[in-house]
Image (cartoon, one colour):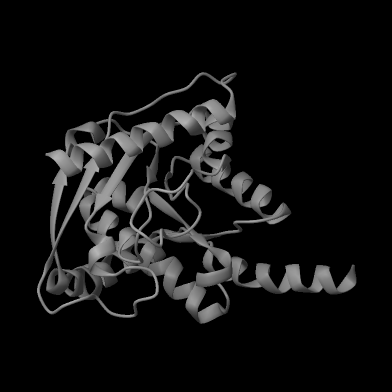
Length: 236
């Protein structure tokens, strides 16, 4: 038991250092994105954004997106208008992006991210933290599949997205990202081919659920809507 507690504490230590959302940290992250991240993306990606008018409300939103590549988060941040980009917080895998303080601090600042435990009791704690962020007016970017696809196809959604929407009665934006799998699939360290890749982000119709809605039914509905956006993308 003691060994388990020590491991849990070791994983949680970086969270203390990277959870700051003060104005300096927020604008430092935006400066780094404008000076470094977004110009680098333009070297590899030609981004088009569809149905941005679905984001005319004030939020907060839960962006529920398919996950095909490490490019997904920076691409989606670039697609958002400034007011939402500064507001959004990204649920990033704690066991991948927050394994040490420096990596966690960079991820937190550059991507507006917070550590999210994908398994075990830590997942419940992460969901509670996400709910707190929503209550403070932040939007969230969640990848309900839990990990990147290995074949480009949408994977079944985890029920955490349903629990999150159920607890906060939050507005969910189904989101489809097309083209990042071809550019940088799981297992690749560098974008494929020297040419720029066409990437399209499509924002779906906002979804709202009653507080007493079933979490599994919410999850199924959100997955269906995201999947439908992918089909529209293929035939548009």
